[in-house]
Length: 342
Image (cartoon, rainbow, N blue to C red):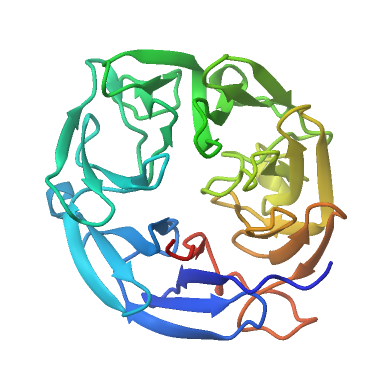
């Protein structure tokens, strides 16, 4: 499997404490107490971390985006908003305030906010997060924010035009540095309840599609890789989860999934049998390490370090000893790599 690189990983535990740990040594420490949810990915932008904090108030008008500087532990409120995601070049951050309105801020915090309104009939993804792509932002038709027959498209704020990609739900996007196109990984709604529903990878510029199919009988775990980081750093691979058991049969017990690595150019998919997860309620999460050869993955139960080339895997967590069963209460969906500030 090889030694893991010395990169920093941040995650929120179930008591609201933000940990930062070294993946190579597993040394970790608590840097702050935050209002972020362990079930939602923290968003790294410009060397800082962002999340949505409702402060214990359920009214959407009270939800705000918070920022943490890991170097100092300083936390500040950025703006009212339900989620946050970075621009393609990482120089700006977008904060949705309603399903159809968002603001754009410079990542340094300087300058005024730019207010954006979506065209009539289109909305931002529901829940936490969003995706900026080359020349636009991912949007859905109607007010549902994705799913249930909604059209998936990319909206260009400068021209106001929406380019329709298909009918389905996106779960990750990748844009090569400086490129004029993005890759979107999404699941078509037309076969949402069929075990063998494929994953489609679409080039936003050419509309060329690569179809990924599971070699296992029960297809992909709902939502694919669910959280950010499914595309490898070079965009050549996509980490997804495949069902080991029938996800539509409630009598079969907890949902079981295995990690799989797909080629984004051929659609060929390889399963990692040694990385098996319990995915009862949520899909798993995957975070590629900067080399693009290794990744961390986890779910409700099970967390592993995986070698994408050899398809080998070993249990990985910060609070269990090697050889012990990994705990689902250690690193979780909130996990994110902290990129150094350039």
